[in-house]
Length: 319
Image 1 (cartoon, rainbow, N blue to C red):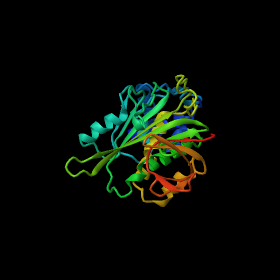
Image 2 (image 1 turned 120 degrees about the vertical axis):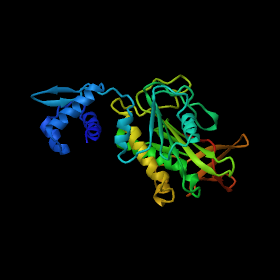
Image 3 (image 1 turned 135 degrees about the horizontal axis):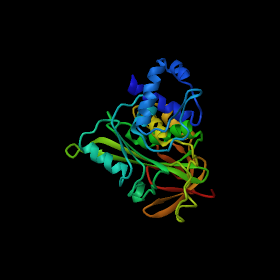
Image 4 (image 1 turned 45 degrees about the vertical axis):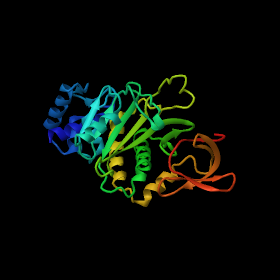
């Protein structure tokens, strides 16, 4: 119970940052003795948590530095039990997740980092990943079936929206196929990578990488006009990671649920917009009529022909 109680108290102290709660009230809240509360608090203090204690007022965490904490990530996920790997610095969480996959890491394994030196996005783009300002997260999935595998990226987008809503209390929009926006600025990107079995050629693992700009960021000049962040100084990235893990595990195991694509379409910011897309490096314009159940973009061209975009990058006209 002590280990579990410590995790529960971590979340309580973060949620009530700067406020005091008496030992008696904590004991009543969690159904344990005051002695158990004292021991759990003492253990947290020994781990470096700056919890203050007062005989008159109880216990308080005056400030929680937003460091990534594997125990807090796990407790915030509520029901996920796979391994969590936390790094201060790494080249790419997706790269490390692929290495773990090759070594037989189990379904649901998570890799998170405080900073990436070679973060990757789609189409070979880099993902700027400064220290302590974002969440850089990868999840290893062992799919039971590949029937609905085209919905992996939409599932990741929906899970990210839900996790951000719960922790930052703001709802980002989804820009097909793999970006999250607040207003006209990108705050998160998704990179889903399939790992195939050499002998059978079938997909045996999917690595889902998600990078979220969390705290206020001073972007490089080339990104300042197009990139943004959640702008939330109080956001705890470990809690965000735990909730993201929770929702990702749910949706990647319920890819056949029609609600998934309903939520993806609901949060889309491209439906009904004119866009520019490229085929064979040639730009075309069209009107987005919708998104089908496979996550493909339905586009009506100016010559009245309808096409499906399966992948690629688009830009919104007159945004």
